[in-house]
Structures are given as C-alpha cells and as structure tokens.
Length: 364
Ligand code: XIL
Image 1 (cartoon, rainbow, N blue to C red):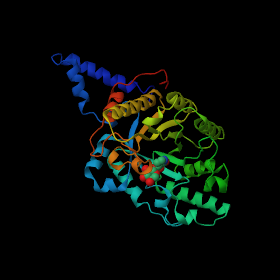
Image 2: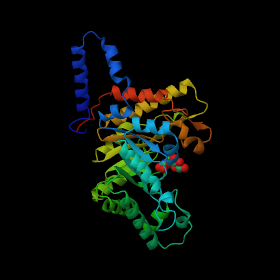
Image 3: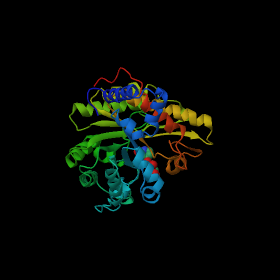
C-alpha cells in the first residue's frame, strides 16, 4: 500500500476495530484491542504502513535450523542474502558462476511472500583472490566489472526488489573510497555500474548503500551530493540504503529523520538495510531496554518518512549475528536472543508499528 498516505490503510484498520467494538459492546475495549493484535506479526503490522520488515539470511541456518526458518517466514516480508550474492561466492573463478546458494534463498522468499534485496553487485570487500591477486589492466577491470554485473543481475532478473548496486562507496570524510574499481574506472564507475545493472534488470530498484550515513554529517552530505548529481545526469538510481549498524555506546545519529527526508525529497526511496544495535557485553535488562528504545526511534523515523520502504535487520537473531565476530566484546544486537526468544526490542517494534506517531512528512 503506498497510495495517498501511508496512514490511509491504518485508518481503515482502525475503523474496523471501532466497528468491531460497536458490534460487540459486551467486551471491554482494552481486552478487544490487545486480543486483536496479540498474534499480529511484524510483517502484518508493517504492511499496513507500506513498509517491508526484513532480515539478513545465511544459507546454513536457513537449511539446518527449522525453528529459525519458521520465524523468518512468519515475521518478515523481505530478506537479504547476508553473503550469498557477494562476488567471492558468486564468481569464485573468473567467468565461473555459483548462483545455487542465492537461488535457494530466493526460492524461500518466493515461497513465503517475501521480497529480496540483492546484496551486492559492486564492493571492495569479499572479492575472490583471482581478482584481488590478478594483474589486470584498467580496461580489463572495467570489462570484468561489466560482465559480473550483467551475469549476476541478469541471472536474478525479475526476482530482485532492490539491488545494492554499489556498496560502501564513501570514506568517513565524504571522499570517494579508493578501491580496485574507483582506481581502475575512475569516479564514474558508480554511474557505469548503475547503468549496466539497469540494462541487466530494468525493473529492479537500484540503490547505493553505505554505513555511518544515518545522521547528518560529512559522509551523508557527500552521499546526498552524489545521488543528487546522479539524478541530475539521469543515471538510473532509485534509492539509498542506510546500513544503520548502531551501538548503544555511540548515541543516536543526529537528525536521522531529517536526513532520510532530504534523500526522499530528491525523489528516492530510502531503506534501513542492515540495522543492528550492539552493546558492550554482558547483557543487562537496562541495556536491553535502551536497545529497544533505539529500535523504536529508528522505526518511528522510518514510518514518518513516506518513502522509507524497508526496515531490514542484519540477521534477526543474536544466534547468527556477525557482531561478536567483528566487534570484540560486543553483541546482542538483534531482536531475538540466542535461543530465538523475542527480546524487548521485538516488542518495541511491534508496538511502534501498532501505534505509529504521525508526522508532517507523510506528504504522498
Ligand atoms: C558482513 C556479514 O554479516 C558477515 O557474515 C561477513 O563475514 C562480512 O560481511 N556491511 C555490509 C555487509 O554491507 O555486507 C556486511 O556483512 C556488514 C557490513
């Protein structure tokens, strides 16, 4: 639903609740309300607002952990392959493609009415050694990149909702990150990649995705200038992904909502693509409550910006989170714990979706 306002569907739902009350006056209102929502899933509640709630997914738990897969299917309306569409998996040898892991995840999504975020086509990380260790000319690298994009986006043509076409193109100061791609093709590699991806899959929404662009600052300013210039050049770009890897020790990004809104005002979709909210271990009830507040705030900001279409958690459960392996002494960043039990952050998200705070920005 994304008609005149994201709140239109919600109003309809509320009308029905009011109707139900008047038809069944013997039930106390509060009991009826909680009964109506008791079993509502994240995906159901979010769909009334035109938002997909997603999770990153890895092949191993998807295939081997039935309880994990069941929650993934029930609660989420989008998935992002956590590693299975990255270059080192997809093209382990030059011109030799391995789409089987990603295909399995796409099939799961199709069976569960979920959309897929393709992640990613161009990045400086998780590249195969034939590529990083090879000695290619700039011309050859340009051709390798083009072939890779055509092969991967072509393979998944028609099956991907949003592609992260270029992942993490910027440095913290806002300058263009020096990578194998920017060095070989120059700064226009981003426009080239978007154009090639569009040719390979004309219906996929094409995104740039980065971290530490949630608040307003030099890096988000640079992303803003970049996508504004791409739009002005009529390069096919549809959205910006905000990774949103937050930590309780860092505080909340400044002016998150205003930042999302300025990108939306360029005519772009905005997505929360990889949210997790880590903490310095051990877990305490206070930290879990603070974490729930951060998840709530991000969801409220997404709800407030009409073009915020996706809220994807970077693996919904602490059981399979990347955080402990990458940030020593930190973890517990997700909304289900290591036993797949919902955490306070889960209840907080359900609550934020049930009781959205209307802002002036739903200007559809
Ligand atoms: C991470 C995965 O979660 C890990 O399993 C992998 O070892 C490294 O990459 N930004 C991104 C994601 O865009 O692709 C990264 O995913 C996390 C940071």
